[in-house]
Length: 167
Figure 1 (cartoon, one colour):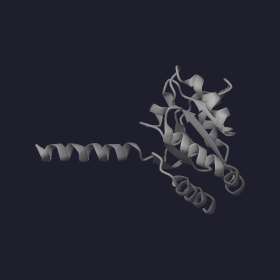
Figure 2 (cartoon, helix red, strand yellow):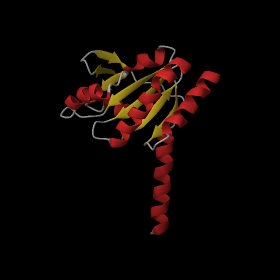
Figure 3 (cartoon, helix red, strand yellow):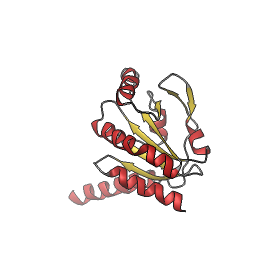
């Protein structure tokens, strides 16, 4: 019985890794709303020639908020050094989506915030639980994915951004 369970867990792990191999994937053609109610085509971020960091987050997710605060502290330097942009996609459902804009204003976040209240992008990009961060290269390819957040992960992300600039 233990061997069967171990085999199944191993099989599930490999299936999950295979699903999250996004090195040749691009952003889905899905329209989202920004916090001001405007329509934004997500795939356009992959077509603008910039390095793009996409962070999936939620107002109830403490690690998400910590990550976005820490990245925001570095963002001006990153924009100047790497010609990049940050997009945060809220996974809050329609009941909690009303909390997003006040939180963004309270933290004085000056980057694009999009809303995915129905989980359409979340499903399309295989995001299970936030925080999940995607790095999109200048050609629109997803080249790096990171799940979870611990203090200092933003510096690992910066190392991956640097690699894109150096290549």
